[in-house]
Image (cartoon, rainbow, N blue to C red; front, side):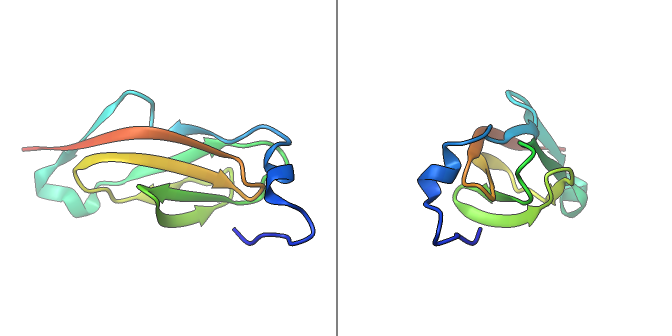
Length: 104
């Protein structure tokens, strides 16, 4: 997210509540159907503090996209193990591990 040069990121990130990822769920292994991989999506969603206006989604440090806090971002994943991270426009973040496998 764009940074406001008048407000140090550390100051903004230390105030308020960081986002909490609600989807994908913690500890769940997601199964993709082999015959419809291009249609399989996982909604990415997080609960945020009231001052958050945008959330930014990353998988293994690669930027996926941004959304408003109440709106999910749909991810078309590939099989593997990933670290999913959400960062709000205040610099606060949450992360979780996610596993995706293909089933026949």
